[in-house]
Structures are given as structure tokens and as C-alpha cells.
Image 1: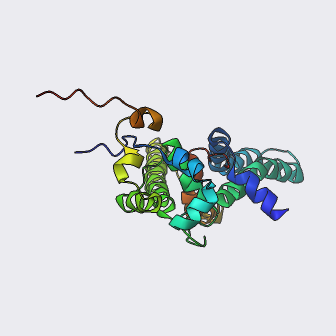
Image 2: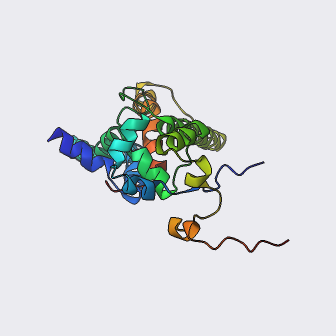
Amino acid sequence: MNTTITGRVEYLPRSRRRLLVAVALAGYPVAVAVLAGLKHTSLNPWLILALFLLVLLPAGVALAVGYRYARGRIDGRAARLDERDLALRQQAYALSHRVLAAILIAAAAITYIYLSSGNTLSFDANTVLPVTMWVIVYVPALPSLMLAWIETDQPADA
Amino acid sequence: MPDPQRQVHNRLAVLRAERGLSRRQLAEKLGINYQTIGYIERGDYNPSLELALTIAELFRLPVEAIFSLKPMTPLSEEIFREPPAQTR
């Protein structure tokens, strides 16, 4: 069963993998935005939580698939990495560095625009927690996601 | 400066089939992952010089008979090609 799932994930076409990576990356910020938007409404808190989890679930699944796809090639858990795996790992790390830099620049720019428009930002647990969670979950997973993004389709067995 | 993205053409699939080797068997002999063989055959991955030389050694062929920067012509065509007319 486990081998079957791994086998299926291994042969996922690149277009589908890229969709999963996009869902994994966008899911969490969207879920947090939904939560922040609905928190101050009169909606039932349980309904808000359900909506939050509903948006978060596909992102979690996509993250797990992306991590599974890397098959230990990023963290070196794979039994044997050959020269192509090592080259791919390097490319994945380089791309995740670029993506992370782009995200940080965008976040800094948005924060600056927000603050320079006369708004204030309070650093309390409610503000810091989503960012901390993002860092804890996404920074280690980013190279695996980028590997799933860049690797071309697996050749059929012969 | 050579273009790192330039495709290196190869006859690996033909040679492998000729010797009745599966990708897994060839990969085992070379000490690499079997998917890498598929990627090389498809032209999606250019092997290192070391791997190319190891492959050539395994097939007991010169490396230029397996890998080329120009598209490969069929082996039969190369074997039976008329030699150029000798001029004196």
C-alpha cells in the first residue's frame, strides 16, 4: 500500500506536481487571510474554524505529496543519490533560495506600504503566530517543493 | 564557453536494447539510479564526463560512438556508409 502510494507520487506528471506546489504555497496564506477576515464577524466560531481547516487541508495534503515526491533526496535520507539527484538537489536549493528571497522582499514591501499608509502593526501572539508557523512549515519544505516543481516527468519503465 | 543547456545526443537506448539490458540492470552496473538512465536516453540529463566514460567502458566502445553533440545517425547507416572516394 505504502509502496503503491510512493510509486504513484513518483510518476506524477510535472503539470500536476506544479499545481500541487502552487496549492501548497498559496493554501496557508489564503487560510490565514480567511481566518483573519472572518474573525471579527458574527459567524459561529466553529464555522470559521471549519472554513479555515477546509482551506488549509488541501495545502497540507499538497505539502505532504511534495515532501513524499522528494523521497529523501533533499535531506539526504535517500539510500543513494547519484550525480543527477545531486545536481537536481542543488537546483532545488538554488530555486528555493530565490523564492524565499522573493517572498521576504514582497513581505517587507507590503509591510512598509501598510505602515507608511498611516496604519499600525502590533506585534502580539496573534500576528507573530501565523508567521512563525509559516517559517516552521515552509522553510524546511521549500526545497522539496521546488524539486517537485523543476524535475521533468519520469521516463516510463523499460 | 560551452552551453550547459546544450543537449548531448546518445545511443544508449539502442546499445542497451542490443545487449538485452533493462534500465535497472544497466543502472546497477553503473551504480546510479535507474531513472537517470531514462533521463539520459531521453536527452533530459547530460551525464558527467566520468559517467560518460564509465558507460563507454562498460559497452567497450569509444565515448564518441555513444555520445555526440550532433544528432546521431542510425548505426546501420554508419556501418554501411560508402567510404569517401580516394583522390590521388
